[in-house]
Image (spheres, helix red, strand yellow):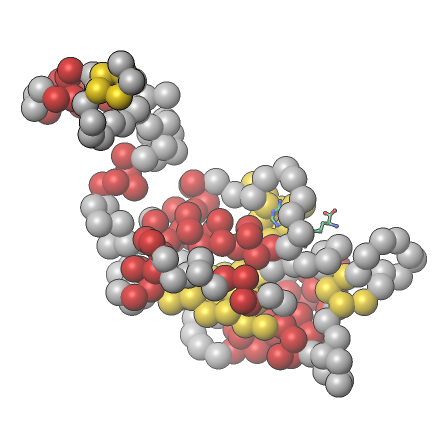
Length: 219
Ligand code: SAM
């Protein structure tokens, strides 16, 4: 696995939505330690005219607005050109392939990702025709924008970058790990809570028995 710092570029009309999300917890520490770099790019910076218009009404009628092709394509091409490698371009879309842990693992090995977030009623189709992104859905429901989906991808991918979790084994032991199973029940102090006691075996110090118990209790 490549040990170089990973880079994620997010292309969005709402970069400030990522405030807070990028500063805290596992992700905040990964950024601070330089294991990962996340850059936000405002599509409006590539829009033209006094109003910096990025959306317009759909031809043929229908509700809402669409993200316009010119500013979005210019934004992605501009961001792509800032550095090498060109990166893997992924657009957030409910029509995309369903995101899962295996895909997260694959993306964690990429040196650079560019995540394109839709808004309004989605993308003018020429954005997809010209840029040819992979389309990624986080599930069968409709969000107001791709930013939350991009955060899901960033978070799931970051956990799988070597060194991000304190103990690399913890990503392997988790649900959807290499064996595809779900995690076993876990407990911390106190030993008894409202008549519910921690299973004795976990207090035994017998590592083989604990491992066996955990295997047997995977959900
Ligand atoms: N009109 C679109 C449709 O019916 O498929 C929905 C557009 S949605 C309101 C706006 C944007 O949110 C999409 O372009 C996409 O970027 C993002 N989005 C919504 N649901 C998503 C999902 N399940 N997975 C990934 N992105 C999603």
